[in-house]
Image (cartoon, rainbow, N blue to C red; front, top):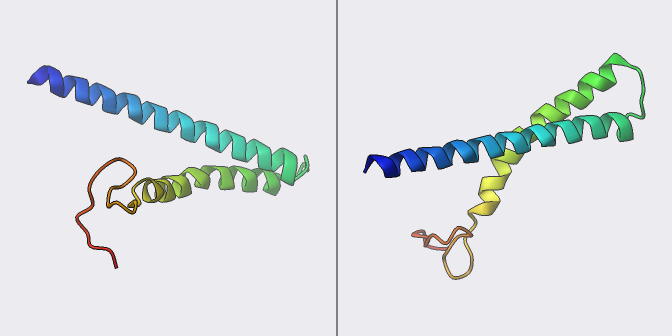
Length: 90
């Protein structure tokens, strides 16, 4: 009984670490990409801060919209994870 719980928590920690590593990569790619491609190597302090700010906010938006898209119901009433929906369609 306790071994199953420990394995479940271990899996949750691994998922937590993977999600946070993906968010770190997302922040870095967006921040550096904006700074180099959009702002064009301007040496303004505000362009670097703006690129970093947009990069930091991007995982917040991703974490809000991604679960909504991943749990949308399919025509057969199951969501993408295979759960059967109990809600009636509008």
